Length: 456
Image 1 (cartoon, rainbow, N blue to C red):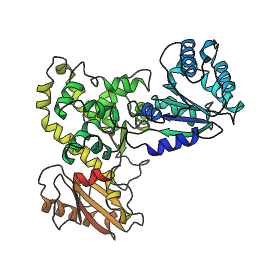
Image 2 (cartoon, rainbow, N blue to C red; image 1 turned 90 degrees about the vertical axis):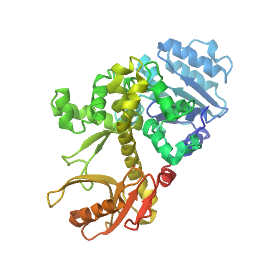
Image 3 (cartoon, rainbow, N blue to C red; image 1 turned 45 degrees about the horizontal axis):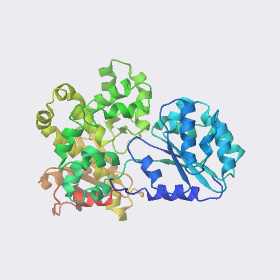
C-alpha cells in the first residue's frame, strides 16, 4: 500500500470530534481518488464503524449497514429496520459510550432515499448531546456541499467539521518517490498532479513512460476513461463538462472561443464554466493587477495536471490509441509534452514564490499579459507585490536547460520601466530554471529542488 502522507490537520480535527462525550456531524468531501476513504480508515479508532455505500436500493443498504454495526454491537443486524430513522434510533439506544459511524459514498444513500438528510437532521436535533458521531463522506462535491452549505438544506448549520479534501502538494511526491531527481519529480507532477491514487498506480512501473502507456494510452488502461468517471459524480450527463474541458485542453481559453466552438451564446456558458471552476477542475485567470470580477481579459485553463495532460494528449488522439498505437502517439507528442511540463512548472513556481521569499510578505503571484503603454505586447510569467505595496517581484520561469539569463533580465528591466504598477516600487527580479543560475543580474534564482521543498 502506498504511504499515507500529510492530512495531519484533518485527522486531528476528526479525532477531536470523535473523542468528545457528545457526538456530532462531520462532512468530508472532495474529488474522487484524493484519499477521503483512506483518511477515515487512518483514524483506526476502536469505536469507529466504517460503511461504504453502493448503488443498491435503500432496504439492502440498511441491511448491509446493520451488518457493519453488528461487528461492534453484536446482534444489531438481527432486526429489520423499515427506514433510516428506525435504524438510527436503535443505534442510539444501544450505545453505552461514544461511538462514531462513517457513511462513505453518502450520495449513493441519498439517491436511494432523498429523505435521508432530513432524517439525519431530525436525529441530530433530537439528540444534540448523544454519544454518536456521524461522518459523511462523498465524492459528489456539488451534492455534498449542498447538504451542508446551502442555507435551505436540512443539514445546514449542523456540522461540527466540514473538510474539503484537496490533492496533495507537490512536496509529498518526493516522499513517495525518493529515488527520483527534482527534475523528474516535476515531470511526474505534470502528469499525476497531487492525486494519491494516481501516485499509487504509478508506483508499479519502472518509469514514467511505461506508466503512461499502460495507464492512460491503452484503451483498457485504468485511467483511459478517468474524466468520464469524475464528471458523472457531479452531473447527470458528462457531455457538457467533457466538451468544455476538451476545448480548454486543446487551447480554447477565452469564453468567446469556447462559445464559438460549441456554437452557443456565451451567456449560456456562464453557469457551466462557474460550475467547473467551483469544483476546481478549471481555473480562471486575469492579468496581474486586474479585478477577477470586472476584467474582460479572463482566460480559462485546466487546474488539475492530470486532466490537463489527458485533454491535451489522450482525448484528441483516442481514435489512434484505440488501434493500439500508444507508443507512436507518445513519440510524436514529445515537443508538446515538453511545453506541457513547462506550463505546470510555471504554475508551481507562482504558487511557491511567497514561501521562497518569506521576508517580503508577498501576496499570491500571478502572470501578466497584454499591451504596454508603448504599444508593445508582452507576457510576464510571474508578478507579485508585498502586502505594503512597496515591492514588486517580477520573474521569468524557464524549463530549458540553459536559459539566456542576460536577455531575460533585460526583458524584465524594460517591462518594469514602462509598467505603471511598478512605478515607485522596489523591483526584485527572480529566475526559476531547471538548472539554478548564478547570474548576478537576478536578485534570486531558484531550482526545482527549492520549489518542491516549499510546496507542502
